[in-house]
Length: 244
Image (cartoon, one colour):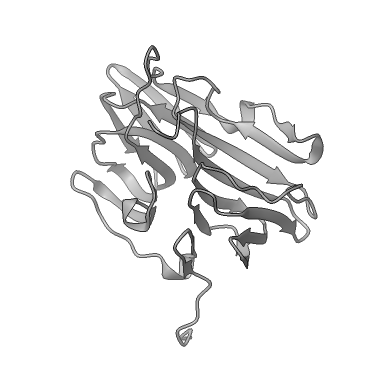
C-alpha cells in the first residue's frame, strides 16, 4: 500500500534519522555483486561515511583509501590481508587502518555496517595495526554504574585510534541518565529492539534497522521501550584535539 508521502525519516541541520522505508541502494566503483545504502557522509555534514553493504555470495567491497571498520550484521565474510584470511560471522568485526592492503569478500549473502574515515594523525602516535574481533568476546561494562545499560568497546581506547565504535545494550525501560551534549559526532545503527531518541528539541520513535546521525553538540538522549532489550552500534570521533 502506498504510504501517501509519510515516513519517519527526518533531515535537520544537526541530526538525521534514516529509516528503512526510504533506503536507496547504490554502487561504488570497484564493488562487485554488492550494493550500498549510504546513511551518513560529508554531504549531510558528517566527517565520516557510514553505509550498509548488502553482498551476494562472492561479492566484494570497493578498495578503500581511508581507514575502514566493518561489522557483520548477517551472513559470513572473509577479510584478506596479504597472505592471511580472517573469517567473520554475525557480530564479528574488523578494523583496517588507512593504507592497509585488504579485500572484503562475502562467503555467502551478507550485510555489513561499514564506517570509513580519513585518519587524523597525531604527533608521536602511530596508527594501530589491523584488528579482528568479536562483540561476543568483549566484556560489557555498566554505564555510570547502571547494570541495565551495558557498553562494549570494540576498539582499544588508545591514542592510536581517532574514533571509537561501541555497542550499547539497554534492558527494557533502561535509559541514559542524562542528556548528552558534546563535541563528538555520532553514527548510530539500531540493531535490536527500539525506544525513544531525543535529538536537539525533537523526540523520535526508533526501531531495529534505523540509522541516526548526530552532529557535534546535538543534545541527545535514549530510553528503551518494549519487552525485549534495545541494542545499537555507535561511532564517535575520539582522542583528538578539536583543532586537529
